[in-house]
Image (cartoon, rainbow, N blue to C red; front, side, top):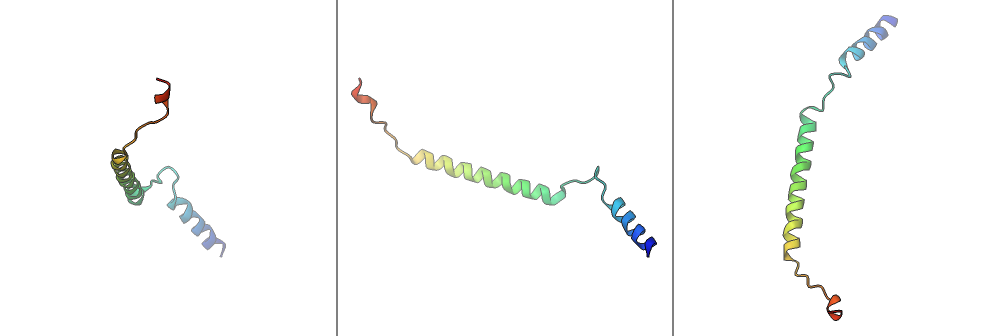
Length: 63
């Protein structure tokens, strides 16, 4: 029993190498989706700001 526990501990230790852990394909896909979503949000915000017709009222009495 002790050998099986030691063997499983050794396999887990060898399988996860802290120097070689990377985000992989899933990390890239999530990062790309967040980037594309941000781009669409900024594009939508820009188009909505262009539709605003703002005339400032208040400082005209001082002139």
